[in-house]
Image (cartoon, rainbow, N blue to C red; front, side, top):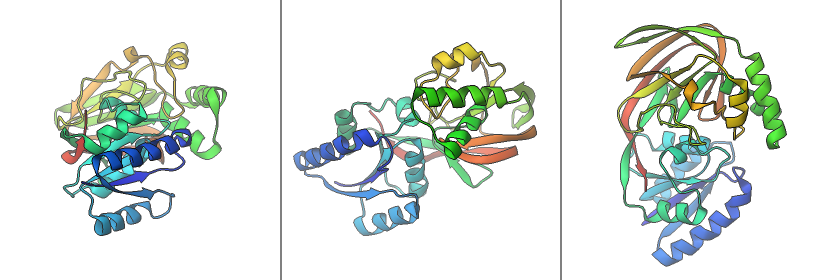
Length: 290
């Protein structure tokens, strides 16, 4: 088997060396032909495409967080090449939802030898932006913006951005139009979920990554103490699961918001928006799972 590893060298850097060593060891043991492609933030998609053409891998492993997974997924769309995940990021939301092992040795083994390959739906926003895990508007997107622009480190830095984001995020009013109906909602955050949980394991819906639907999850209220207690990573506001009770499951939606609001996809800040079109690309990728 020929396996291409796309690795983000600055994602969870403390564990990357161990993962790379483990890949070499397992490749020898399994007689796997492999190659590394390191991301740099410049022309990454083009570089991966070149490797697909030159190396012709049987599968591609995304080594990093949700952003790296999304990058690899975008490149593999329309190609019959399975993707595996090696969770090396600060936020490994999709890997958590798919129950990919967090232990490096086990994750490497699965990525290289796993036989269970299932379809993966992909969310599409405004027919041009893609999401494999979760996107949202409001509090969490505001925090992603602050980390992108200002940076931060440790729990103290995280708490600063969390508290600021909650304080700065206004109550939103929005209209959601789906094939099933029109909904008038208000809240502080709306998640658009392909998977059913955040990276900490907090469930936000009963959805699946391969059910041909996505969930719109409205956060109607913010309990600050619960948000602080549940917040475990710098990329997501993991609010108490009871706050994710207002859920719409659908295949397509148009959302109009009463003001411009921050928007993020898989941990990448996308700017401010006041309307969105969302649809699901059913079984658009193939992914290796336990």
